[in-house]
Amino acid sequence: MMTAVSSEEEFISSSSETESELWLQENHLKDRETSSKCSVVSFILGLSLTSPFMTLVCASQDILAGTSKPTGLIIIALTAPSVILKIFSLCFKQASQAPRVFLSFAFVIAGQFLLVFTPHLVGRFAGLCLVSVGTGIGEISLLLQAATEFQEISFCSFIVATGVGGILGAVTYVGLTVWATVDPKAAILVSAIWPPIFLITFAVSRANLNGFRNSFAAQRLSNMRLRKFEEDCRLTTRCNDRLSSVRSFFQHIVLPFLVYFSEYIILTAILSTLVFTGAGLGPTFSPRGHFGHYILSTMVGEFLGRSFISMLRAVQPGFFFNSSLPLAFFPLAETIFLVFSTWFQLVPEVWIIWLFCFIQGTACGMIFSNSYHILARRVVSHHVIFCVTLASILETAGILTAGLVGLHVESTLKEHCLHHARNTSSCLTRNTDPLIWEFGNRFASDGKTAISP
Image: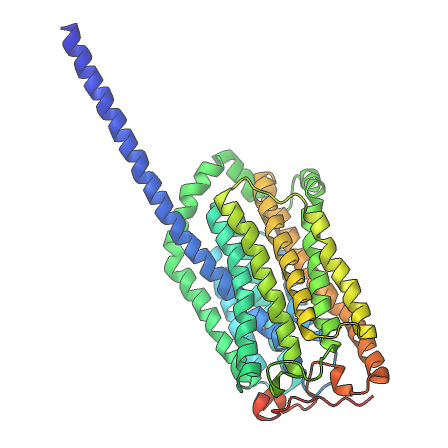
């Protein structure tokens, strides 16, 4: 009798264990499938958010064609509203995701159309400001969600997508306006495809994202910690704890400011005054083509840097790059070197500058990826939103500061070049005829610039 009962119990126990294993396997497969879908969604959202911004950075010289205004004004218009918006996001309760995504789409698409169809320069700057607002809303919304709710692989996918978006934005504009004969306005309209893709992707995937969030957020945060997490978004309590978190991770919060200040002051204030006569693939390359190729070289490096760290994190989630501070030395050192090389015309070939741009972008991309991964995974959960938002503010503020400082730097370098260079067309990567904005290379196939001292 005892033997029979024992056999029956063993059979029931074995059956239960088998059912448990099957249940675990099914859920593991389901989680993997959900994670893969969310990674694809994160990639598309990050790509479609970053690409329009970089297209407009590449278009800076063509937007200002026919004027003597410094390139830094474009960078200020593209970043100042975003910085202000991100600062306010620290002080007010976060809105739901759907309205923020729609507002991001509406501001970016409205800004692009205003930029293209407004004949006056003031209207173009208004369009840039609208794009800045939309980009800021989308960036802070998606970055916080990816950092706090998604699995490692999806967060990595979002970081890599921002690098891919930079390349696509740059190569699309450079390819159409420099390699081909498409006018700048049409090239910007081509980039207007990204905001609808951004909105449609979010709308189609919204149910999947909610399921993913509910599945994994429950594993990461208990109900009590989740309540603390939501309360902490309002910036009303635990200031000392927040300051302690900022002090602990100060290096990773401040480094994005430093490296992106270096990157953008190089691109929009130093190299914008450096033209190599006779360089390039053809007559349309010089001088306005230089600016786009400088940015494109940097974005290729950015993609490599962001992908390298993110892919290592995806394969080995515990990996962190602990030597990011020495790595930040390269962008700062390059800034100093390029100031002197532009002032004294030390670099003989354009490909050397492309190489410097590539190295600069790689270092910045690695620091960007590493800093956000550390803040998202090492900071106490109910301080993640504050620290990631602060890092995002400082990153954009670094670009803004580069624009402000560049107002003086670019003017100084240009004036020095005009007084010492034999060929004044090598003093600015811009065409001085405003018709270049309307017709591009079809108007000035030789791409020449004539600047009067």
